[in-house]
Length: 217
Ligand SMILES: N[C@@H](CCC(=O)N[C@@H](CS)C(=O)NCC(=O)O)C(=O)O
Image 1 (cartoon, protein in one colour):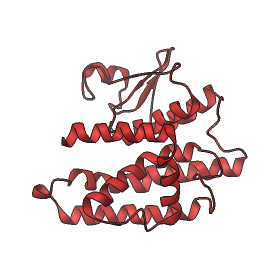
Image 2 (cartoon, helix red, strand yellow):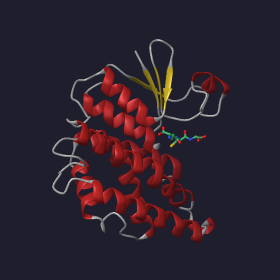
Image 3 (cartoon, helix red, strand yellow):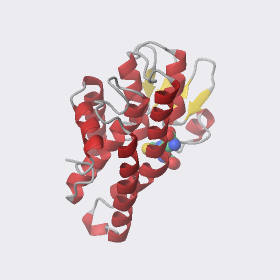
Image 4 (cartoon, helix red, strand yellow):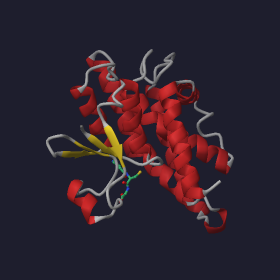
């Protein structure tokens, strides 16, 4: 059985877990922590990139990169498809996921790393929110006007990418008393839809557990 190397708090691993849950693949993909830890020689021998997530296939091949793992699952297990029908909508889903990866995610790191007010770099926090806001504006323009999901009436690969990232932004907004997500109605709508969904709620619970393990409380 393929093994997904994952951790509760990684938004990238959460994206893949969400695809697994939505596709009903829990009995076809095993989850594990990186053996020996993320930086161990043992894990590097499995995934030379030294990052999570990674999906080790039965052949021994280990596929890193969350977007590629989701696309692989979609190709390998066409049940409950997450790729929107039609070339244009499939491209729109990939576009939204790509903007989230390339332009939004880099803004989240400084918000997370500066959570402790006693060690906070205020300029880095401002830069983080500026980066997130710009990327959210771009994503907002590519989401379906009515949805209710990111692209159409069903959850898609775009929602796999967005839901964990939106969860982090909602956390950052609460932590720093901002309204970055609420100020973008289409993004806020997609996040509300995810919060009402069983599989996405499960992933949000795992992220919450990871946050508590990291910061206590
Ligand atoms: N582009 C990668 C990013 C994966 C990534 O950065 N994962 C983090 C955890 S959230 C990690 O493994 N960091 C360890 C490191 O970079 O050394 C993906 O989409 O999978």
